[in-house]
Image 1 (tube, rainbow, N blue to C red):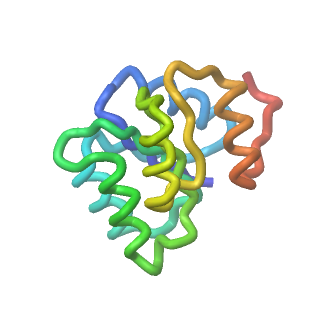
Image 2 (cartoon, rainbow, N blue to C red):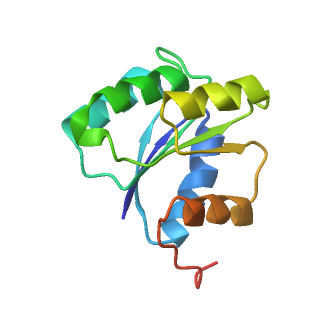
Length: 127
């Protein structure tokens, strides 16, 4: 399984990477929106993308919208991982094509629950 983590916070990318690697994911990181869209456009072999809302160059919402325009990426599960907690923002992300939404701060168990909701098989034997 491969995941793309899109977040401008190095600390958040490190936290997400740690959790996903413990679940046997290969992880690629992007620190801004344009970089993320470039990675996804060139390499369609991802099983999941975790998208922060507030990013330089291009917002998470813009990334979701752009990804959903690409037929090769139409079925890529997109999980918004953000501090945006307003219902309107959640609804906007889901309407744009995000599959799920998790609010920071979160813990490993909450992320695992979201992955299960997305239908992504998770192996929880590793800590």
